Length: 204
Image (tube, rainbow, N blue to C red; front, top):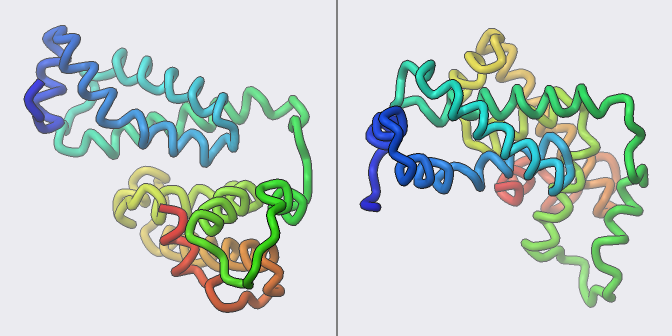
């Protein structure tokens, strides 16, 4: 199928075009899985949630009133599905409850000849660190730094004042920097490469 914008795909989906629906899912499935994984911390759970998200999207496609903002509408459905999933599993104990430093050690026990961390290691550290943030701060990092959502859209999505969203993002980056620094053995104040800018970039 020739590449089409979201509006065209949505219009064709509403007319029952299965190829258009397949193209729409293909376009956004990686992003939805990324959102789900950041919330759930489990690849299996993320896949289950992603499947649920697209079922919801299919059923509610007629309620998407602004096709040009489909991505934001989809992200809101994904967020709600993730929160529903977390509420359902709240009573279940985690399969694994290890300190951050132990999780880091499990990632790769090969000797490191120098103190510099590779980009791939940075990504892994950030993925693990996100799971140790508060729910509010993890969500702020997910929406702003990983999904690249503008602050105004975040405010609308979370139903919060813009100033509150800005403060949340700032606090979230500080907490993430501290967690990453602790995992890298840089101490609570962080060290070279442990600042928020590095974390946001590695998380993308």
